[in-house]
Image (cartoon, rainbow, N blue to C red; front, side, top):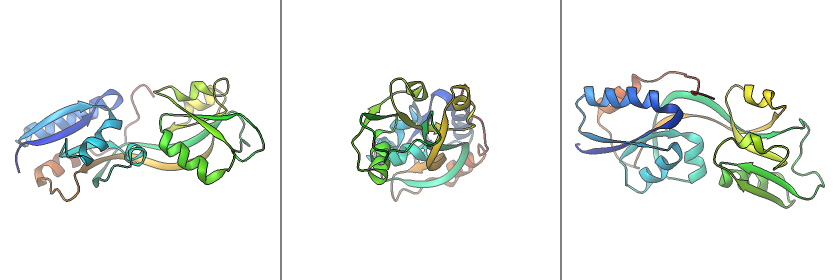
Length: 196
């Protein structure tokens, strides 16, 4: 197979992506590598605009993209959590005007639907979601790696929706060259998110 289109994450994971891009080039794999946002990669792979990519499991779940997860790269290990000021925060409490801020509005809506019949408004965000709590939102659904940022802001993880890692994905049914899997395998390792 030649001419693979591969999406690698930019931003906080750019260092890992740079290592993988170099490994792809060194292995002589005929590929065009695109530096993209983590959240965009699952949809681009699912629609066939990309053949393969590296993304977080939370973004696969958020997008609903149908992709094949081929290899857990362990570039990070996070929890997607419900975050609040009060450790006893309850979506089902008889309180009006509850809002939840999240970069993952689809996952937030599904979680809310499973945990309450109350009207809860989801506020879509684009980064620094924890800063919305408690002045702009009652709670948030966001990624937690170490919990340091939460503790610094006086927040707690009330419930975990899912644990997530970074994975190599491909279009359903596509067999990637063994050289690509080997190159990706050489980047496996737990790394803290840069600037997290």
